[in-house]
Image (cartoon, rainbow, N blue to C red; front, side, top):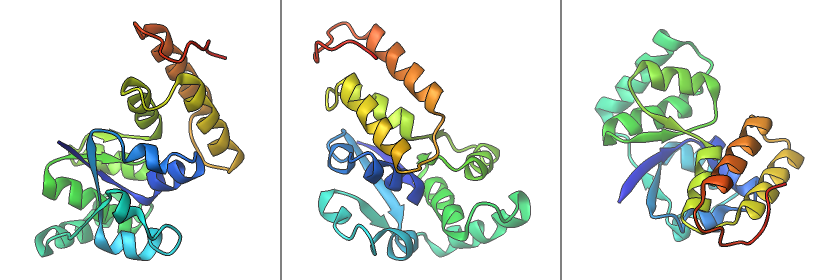
Length: 174
């Protein structure tokens, strides 16, 4: 099963879009550094482990690696964001983030990055959401002041809808 390491940003987007349960229905495993989980996620969303979030330890060698990253990429990504990148490197898997500075660092380190819009597309492709439901989730995220490329997200979802051979929801794109 595909393992993806997430930063806090993605989980906050999923919470804002009321998609947390749907996220964990995807045929993927989601992991997060233990420190990031304890400091940023558990206080507001303590039950994510029950849903399937893997809280993972960053090994000492990769903690050292994370500590070197600010010298290379700057202080813009937080310490916990760098730990997410280090965990993705440690596990040789992709990173989920919407943070532009972390994306840049990940690209510089050869780590593939996906974000919230990609996850929405995967939820539609796996028939966990209709296009209409994905657009409603985007509207929720927007109303809750999340930062996404809104026009691009809506365009990508409409393109996805147009490409689906069986439009299971019977709806039309906005």
